[in-house]
Length: 215
Image 1 (cartoon, rainbow, N blue to C red):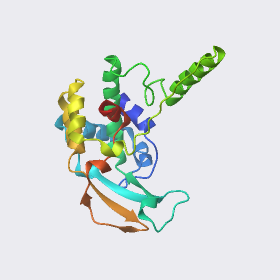
Image 2 (spheres, one colour):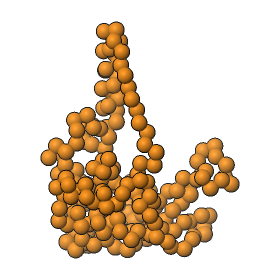
Image 3 (tube, rainbow, N blue to C red):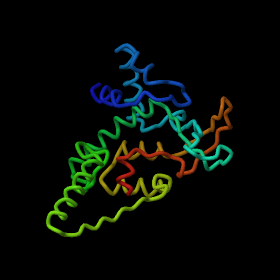
Image 4 (cartoon, rainbow, N blue to C red):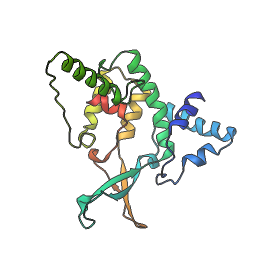
């Protein structure tokens, strides 16, 4: 139950997915009912299955600041998915991160979404390098890359292959396989919804830990 409670405390209370289940609904459940949800999660874990509703996203177009509303490219698509799925994801990702940290998978200077190593850690390192070089009258060279649509260009089979390469086996590997397959979405705009259609790999969001394995 500790894993469940830790994941629930870190799950944001944002708009619900197509199933309309919010975090507040879950936190309002009695202990007995929370154990029933945990029992459901355990059943899904042992069967390595992902419910159809968890693979369905509700797309909300959000107008970018300063952009023309009549231009389709002026909107940023926000995908709303099941809060229960996000909760389950957090439990799995916590185990995944623990495995990678134990096996020292990440390079020492990699930061961002790691325990005690946020992006500000690298900023501090860079600032220290600059100040040290300035004091010694040396030069500092910095090269920055911004990969356009990085998340949108993740190759599913390549991601699964890299997970296997890093030692991920069994149920967790199978769960990711089913999680990435047969995903669907619909667009909701001002109270009107489109039909449900399949989505390509470019329209699937990835947890940060999994994306770092791919990158």
